[in-house]
Length: 93
Image (cartoon, rainbow, N blue to C red; front, side, top):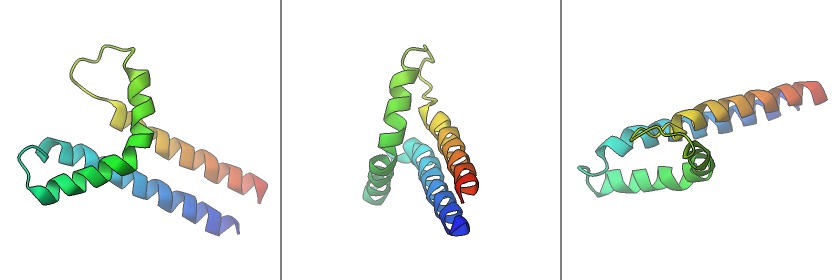
């Protein structure tokens, strides 16, 4: 049971992290890209915005200029949360 839960948490975190990376890369090309790029970017926005939006709101207090660090911080937050959950699973089971 412990292995299954740990694997599921890790797999979910990896999917979210890859979506965050894809979101960051596609944000550079979405204006010049075609419909497929826009639809993939829209999907990544839909999947990652619930994680990124609260971080962006917290980061608005700091003046970072035109650079948006919320996706980078979300990347580390997802990894940290996954590691904490996996540690908790190992303690409980």
